[in-house]
Length: 367
Image (cartoon, rainbow, N blue to C red):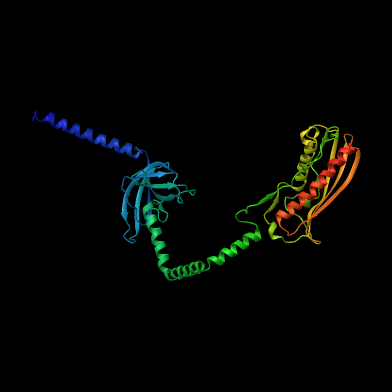
């Protein structure tokens, strides 16, 4: 008897130690220790895949207890009853929302409690009703959605077949009338001005050449500001009188707006006459001794009496004090044959060349 006593004591001590370790681990795992607990009943409508006794109970994401019991409702085959044990300080209310969450990579299920405002009254253990579909995982929810889509497609199979047949008929009609549709779209683009940009053809004026040697140089510093004009003349398009539709000029453009183009080519003409004393733009110099102020009155194709290029400019020479020392009206025209871009531009060059020569000679004489 004495030889067995130490072994019995040692075995009892080891067993007690094992029980104590398991109890300590259980206490740590449930984070509730031996503190006061409150039990609540929870009803789930539907399956609760993977939920086990001992699973965590979270309130607003914080662990407050564990699942104490799971059972099936005898009177409702789809219902699952659960009993949860949570810390008594947990603010569970009668309207607290209950759901099932899946945590971690393995999707471990836990019961999640959230919110609530009403106070739970005294009496029997209150029952919390889980939200519909609370036990569904993402996979189950996807399968349920696919089942519903399949049901909708099955119920509407005949209308879908008719719709697909109508699309086929419509596409075949489009294929048969592709050429007509292209023509209609091209007409709409032309009418509305949208679509791919068309290739514009640019035309320029020529400065007068072969001027007589400058026997009389330009006196003082002369500047030529940009000519003034009404808004209609501030354009790069060819202008016609009377106005009308001229298909050959749809893609026509002057190299610049009419006033700026006349300014540049007049300065070129003065340079061809006397390069050493040629005028500049106002923006290229300080205060000039004289300014040649030009107003564009006409720059158009007159159609009535046979097509002719018409140019009319009024010119004034103003000194640095703003006094007009000379003024003159210049007008010229040149007839041409067909109303086409090239003959019309050639006629404008002829008329402008004569006006520019006269304006240069008049300016030199007036200074």
